[in-house]
Length: 142
Image (cartoon, rainbow, N blue to C red; front, side, top):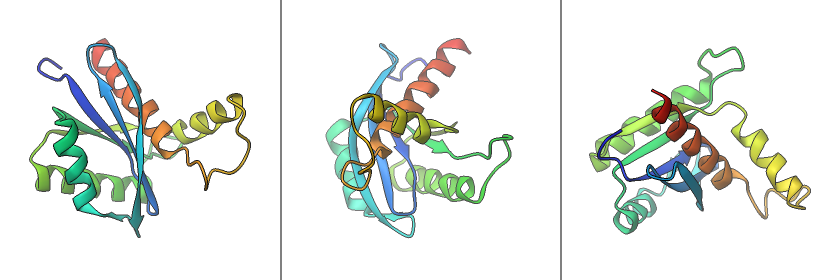
């Protein structure tokens, strides 16, 4: 993980993609924004703008595996998104098992007083932060 300082994490979805920013030094990440997607295709210019603004050293895309660890239909789409990020922006892209991050993000929001209303205040960016922190933790253990 040497040389990695700043990372962007993506919680890929067909309607929206959560984005978070994290630091390798602290191992922490925070919500950044939620991007709209049309059938899983983002507005690439928005991603380009984020990359220009944050200048990350690498990107992490959540891999939505089934509970038994096998790939799902969505994990194939997330891997395709990861390959496109790498191809378009020539940055290292890592994938990370994101099982339960959306569930955990909803739980955090409920503990914070939000019930329902995920359309008005989506949890995708929080899920991206949680998966990015999970990836950072896994790297520090390895």
